Length: 410
Ligand code: NIG
Ligand code: FE
Image 1 (spheres, rainbow, N blue to C red):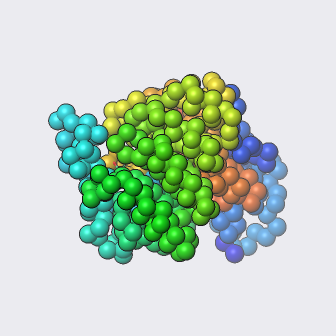
Image 2 (image 1 turned 120 degrees about the vertical axis):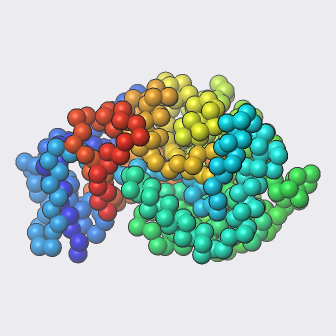
Image 3 (image 1 turned 180 degrees about the vertical axis):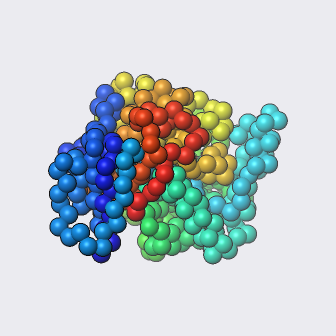
């Protein structure tokens, strides 16, 4: 049995037995903290924590690794509820096109963007895709990610979507952190279906979905509901089919335009609605009537120079908010959630505490892990993060771009 005791922790954040599964509105400004604390882990689970003066719960001190965290802080690992981390090639040439004046949407209309990634992915073997993804997961884990959702959507054919999802399934089995799989066959219309939306939707519904379910390749279903991509009606049809196969929606909505997708996705039982760079009053109302988690992706806003999700508007409306990376080769080539934390504070005017709730408890909820990840509580899963000697919680997002997570304890 491997056991670890982290002792003399200056501040232990997000710890407690009575924390909610969703942190909403004004509650988001509060993160519980225990000073002069310890955490004990056994077989990857938290088995005890509290004040040093109450160091109990460890019956057997043999085979125990002791880490002295004097002056350092400990937090639960972040949960990344939205990534496209399985991909074949980076797209820095489109980055240069955008510097030279083209927009993300213009590049996509020229056949770049998602279709570019799909062409590259079709050329790459399953093993090679897997090896690249493993390296990326190890890298984001070193930045503090302790659970990750990964979407398909760079296949766009039956075989290639299944190939991507099989890679994600292998990652689930081999990675030391939880991996959730989302089927995003409806990421873009392939060139040959540009004028035949019916044909591609039939392919998704009649060929991809049955096989995805048969091989148990997905936990969730996603649609990129956006102008030039999937309309609200097309999304509805796909979510309805997904529902018949037991897949809960987690969707891309309101990245560039408001089309009414938020309310519709919620009607189909969406666990999360992601992006929301654009928000209408009715989106807020629909969210208020539900337990659906809005997810903001500030790395995407930063990289594409598009608006940031209006976090203050959502939080002032009493709503929760989660933050995720959107790690992908086109709109967010970075999966570092400490960077996301900084962007949320600097650009979205979230307080450091609000952003930490959004990266832990709310993010865990947005990927169905509220009972196992995203907080320091008995029975919850490692990893936990040990910081360098920081003066305060705010120092982490303040030090944008710095790596203040010194150790990730699994
Ligand atoms: O979340 N918006 C849709 N999908 C991704 C980007 C995909 C790409 O450009 O490769 C996103 O930003
Ligand atoms: Fe995305």
